[in-house]
Length: 311
Image (cartoon, rainbow, N blue to C red; front, side, top):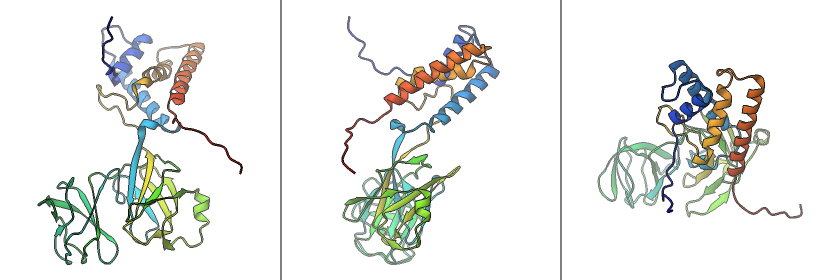
């Protein structure tokens, strides 16, 4: 018999809740889940997803981030409403010098740019001016939403991006590097709070080689040292993003499909007391949920060689 050739099996929030509620006799087969039970199930499922973010690296939820420097700025706010940082961006250079007060800019290429994109222009004074693109006029010209606040010379850098990054849950060590104007990258060390606080002169400028990340409640704070003396450098890093909510009944979980049994087992345990499970049944349900979770954590690990050498 031939195989199906199909690999698109998926589950939704409704599928998970219906399956668990049927298992626990909280709904009858073919009947909808009562609203008060569904509300509790959604709450527990969403809380479980958020709690999972505390348990280590989620390979499918690792994103790229690039931070654009501000001259002599010691710390940057990461997340919505924060400093200029994006998962993907374009870099080009000024092709025709422009004077302060104008709102058009001729660059080497506008390929990939769209109206509404954020754009940062290196001014002759050394810093970046950020505004948005009003229109992409040609393959080499854009109109800006704001007038230039300084002159710009030929070959000054121009960066554009569409969406600012969300708050990183964690910044991943050994992925942080600084890229110079020639495209060469140099590793940057992620240090502890105490190591950063022990730096005597946090305002000294140069090529950044240390960062400290502080995940706050709604945004993140990234401290760098030395502070930037050149906006033609950018800071790249990988970070663990927030797992998405399942706000609608048909939403699929923000997990690989291999995690389906874990999600159902985890919710089954969390709904067990509502279903009237005995203490022993709850212990058994928790053991099953923990076992499925461990299986997922074992699966969610990078492949690579491990090397040992003398200290």
